[in-house]
Length: 254
Image (cartoon, rainbow, N blue to C red; front, side):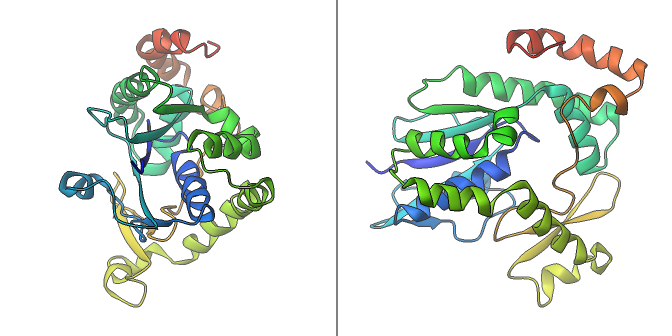
C-alpha cells in the first residue's frame, strides 16, 4: 500500500523546512504530491480524508503539530524536535507572544516530541533540529532512505541547494516585502491564490505562502542557546523548573 507521509512534530523545530524537502523528494521520485497548495492547517483535511490513496501517481504529504493517533502501518512520519528552551524563545518572536504564553505552550510541545519519539522507528523518523541546520544534505539523505524513494545523490544535492539557509532567507525577505499593512487584502485580492495573512497574538499579522508554507518572520533565532541572552535570569529559572526533566531525558545540555 502506498504510504501517507507526515511531518508531525513539536512547533519551531524545523518542521516546515523538513516538509518542503520531503515534498521535493516525493516529487523527484515521480509522484504528484497532494495537497498541491499547502494548507495553513491540515487537520480539517485529515478529518475528512476517507481514502489514504489519492490514486495512481499521486501521494499525500501533510504537516501537523498534533498527535496522529492511532499511527497506522501505512504511515511514514518525520518528526523534528528541538531544545525546548530555544523553541520557547522562537515562538515568542514568531507569534509575538509573551514569555508566559510561550511557556504555557511548551508542555504540549514536549508531550508531542515524546509521543513521536516513542513510536516504532520503522514508522517514525525523529530528526534533531541541530542536525537539520548543520547537516542538511545528510538529513535529506536520511529522509530519502526512510521513505524508500531512491532519489539520486545529484537530485538530493539540488534540493539541499534549493532549501539552503540563504535561499530560504531570500524567500522570507520576499514575503516581508508583501507588507502586512495590506491586511486582509492579501486574502481577497490578486495574491489570494498564493498568500494569506495570519494574526499574531499581539494583533499584528504575518504572511503565509501557500506554495511553500513558509511565513514572514519564519526564521526567528540565531544560534541555539540564544535563550541564555534573550531571557532574564528570573525567566530562565522559571523555565528550567518546567523543562529540566525533559531536557535531561533527551540529553540536551543544561
